[in-house]
Length: 264
View 1 (tube, rainbow, N blue to C red):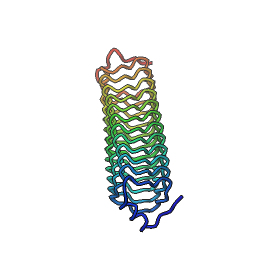
View 2: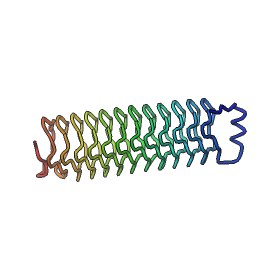
View 3: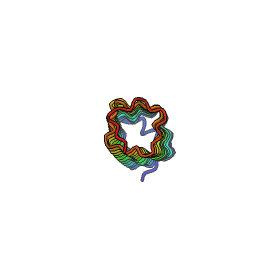
């Protein structure tokens, strides 16, 4: 893997675009506000590099190492980050519109306030990630691992989270309206004051989940496991809970239980 000196890197950045840096060793490099639009960085080592405010729109970063990298406010729109390593990367306020992060390793990543509608995070690992007030509407998160992620106030409107792992996750005040959460694991998660209107949670696991004061108008909970869940203050009159398991549910403050509710 080629290691560039600071002088060589400066010369390259001033050269013709897009840059060809595949498999280069750029660890620790200073790339603040660099123009990397369309650059080929496939397999590159950017460990601990500083790319604050950099423009990487449509760049190629498949299998690149961006662990512990500073990417505050960087533009990753339409970037290929499939199978990339973003462990503990710092991306608050970054733009990742339609970014491809399929099967990326992102445990501990900071994506708070990031703008990433329609991003592809299928089978990505975001264990312990920070996505506070992140805009991920209409995102693709099928089989994504979000175990113990902090996602309060996140916007996941219309997103596909089929069979995603959201156990022990903080989703308080999140917008999950119209989202597909069928077969998702939400056990022991915090969904306090969460907008679940029109969401599909058929077959989902919500054991010991806190749903206090959540909105569930036209929500599908068919066959969901809600045993030991906290449904205090929840109006279930317009939710479809056919075949849902409500064993020993905490229902203090239930409002207007409708005919669709089926207690096992």
